[in-house]
Length: 160
Image 1 (cartoon, rainbow, N blue to C red):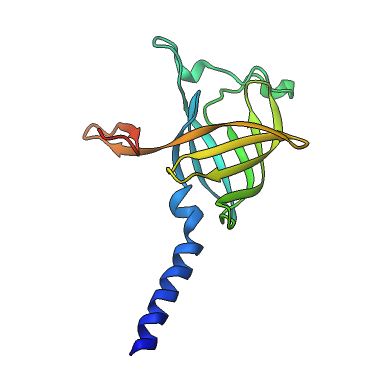
Image 2: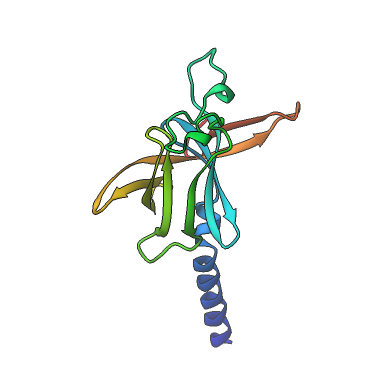
């Protein structure tokens, strides 16, 4: 009987580790300029811009990828652009996702990237050139389907 309890605990620990990235990273995130949805893309993770945080009166869908280094892509809207690709969908022992790239719409370039799941539930997303990295914290969001079939979002860690 004692062995059965330890076996159950071991199975729970293994399953919680296996599902770690999917349960804690997949979802909607508020960045400094947008809302990004992190999802599975095959056996990797990707991140798609779902909306842009713009001044009132500005249509987010009118903002183009005008800084893209590929001239053919400069006329596409930023909404819908995948900015994360190639990330493993399993956190390592340091709560880090590795092996990916991030697209920075501000300068139109792609950088090697690291993503850290912080103790407070936020993500630290960094783009790197050689050994120099810079980034920002993304905050988790909860999306809710309203009675009129629209969606609303709020910060996951807020008290409201």
